[in-house]
Image (cartoon, rainbow, N blue to C red):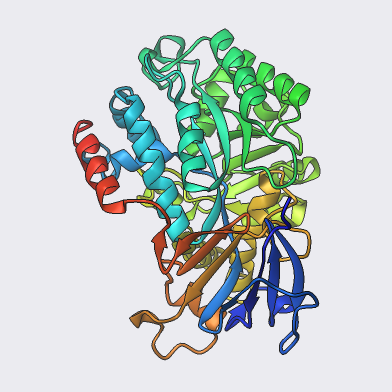
Length: 447
């Protein structure tokens, strides 16, 4: 068996971690050496990539998304609405999803993420109308095709309108069906090893779309198979009112009552917590995926990131669904996080390094992964390289800060597990024009 090839990524223009200011050496899928400025690799290398024009980052990690929503960006029925009315407008549209729509929308979302420097994506798919029972299988197939690292969540909705929930009955499944398919997906696709390209988590959609029994059973199943748990929580005041009316308790109390206050849990949004709830979440090590663009578009509020972090919660960044963003661009989401969080905490406390750290180490911690999210020896070679050639960077000083402050949009090179997946700003092996054309055709069927 041949030894894996070695690549020296040489002397980047700037990097998030000063320890690799002189570059790094990749062997196979791993980072094996970090270099100081002027230092040469300690071993012979097969290839050299001169990164003198590039800002080098760990691959960005998207901690929350809904890939299928790329089909319903700026959908006419959902414009200028807040969360509950936005959802009730779109649920009937999403109920018409078909298998090809899931395939194509997943390709679109993953390609857009790759082009923005994202190497790992978590998706929350919770719609399984008749004929779409194998939606997660379809997503895994597309992720493998593009070579993106994924943590796909088997979402679920069991509480339809007839039971006091928000979703239409055609989109909900029985708890028995959900749990059986959850176990099938874990056994078939979940890889707990370091360097895993696919992992599975369990993700009942939200307190207003699943039963208490399903939340409890999902926690038990996750414990049995040692997988992560995910859900939406504390996104809006409407949700708090729903929980008080439906369960007689606030969202965090409900979370604890169903066995979800643990370190295997990460939550999307996490906006409306009081001080005592933040401390409880922190003691449990619950992660929070901050979704700034979605929170602004739906007028949901501002996540208390620094209080959550200080309490002990990992904080990551997610683009959220492309019907409430309405894009899948991780480097732009980093900038949105900086701007929105500065409104809450000021410029000194929210730096460009802080938000980049959320989008890398923080998101990795939310997903329960310790092998990605940073440039270090032994970690996976997941890297994003950006140039400062576009017009918005003309006159920029600090190259690392310029990525965030000047509004980087597209990576020049992206590596996942030691393999280039984006080269010269193009997704390798993908006919992007044909893909966009088919996405437009399918999207038109949902209007």
